[in-house]
Image (cartoon, rainbow, N blue to C red; front, side, top):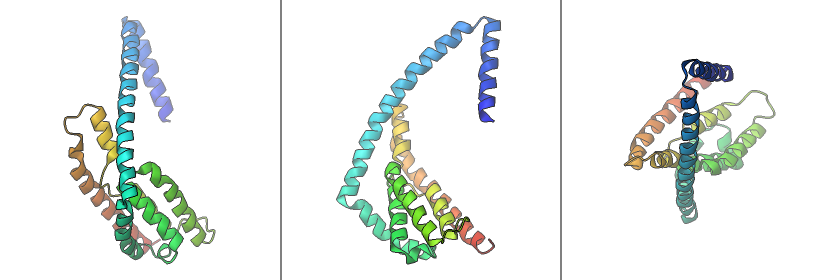
Length: 191
């Protein structure tokens, strides 16, 4: 549906520009927009490489492992079935830790592995278990200790202080995670 809406907006915009004699402005906007987009992507790629390096250092130094140790007891209380299985809990811990540290690319394989392990524990049911639902909510509303992607985008866009987003991101993602977990736990009683 959204494709049709975009097509109609572009189509009517071009038709309107042709009838009002502003077709040259469309071409100029396309050229300028394309050039600035390429420049922005190149700047963003450089900044993302820097943050990936910082996160790799955090991983190699053992910071992510220490964070995983802190998370493990809390996650044992939250996950009913997955907490009993070391493989499932390990994948959950690694996924959430990687997400907290801004390593979303590294978190994806752990997230897939966690879901596979919880599916194994779910005994082939076609309905997601409570643990699977909770993990999905926690993954989507994961607390961001270092929101590297947002910092990178703000820096590439020319922000004077791209890191100012760290504290608000920690607060908002923390509240989102708490609300999500609370809603999951309440709904687990009824469904």
